[in-house]
Image (tube, rainbow, N blue to C red; front, side):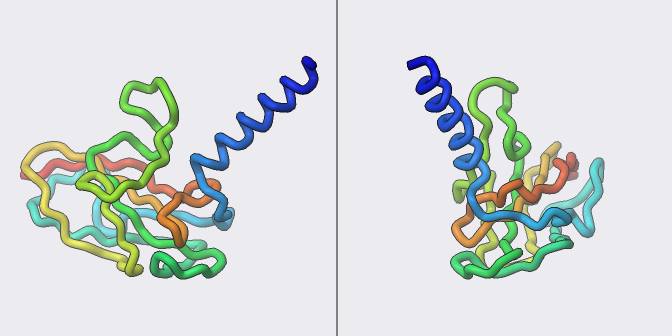
Amino acid sequence: MRHGLLIAAALVIGGAGGAFAGETPSPPDAKVYFVNIEDGAVLTSPLKVVFGLSGMGVAPAGVEKEKTGHHHLLIDRPALGKTADGAGELDYSLPADEHHIHFGGGQTETMVELSPGPHTLQLVMGDLNHIPHNPPVVSPVINITVK
């Protein structure tokens, strides 16, 4: 009985990791980054955001092609895989709202309107179904100030 419980626990723990990051593998050398904005930048709104990507390609959402994905811009939320308080379940969700902007058409840049003040930005690659790759391909979170 004890052996069965250990196997069940291992399946739950192993399955949870896959559910967070998705099933689409990412290339080991894949990197996503901001081309034109650096951490600590002071900018005016609207701001142009250019997405950089190396080690994989861009394909629109819904297109199944190995080693590709599409961009998501996270605004003013904890880093992908983190919670605001550092406790609880890890957050790998990419809903479509003001904090999660999807670029399912394969876009590689955008204009963003932000209110004056501090903001955080992070880029995340999603697979054909808007789910982060496994392991997730994410940029560092950058802090900017809009004047």
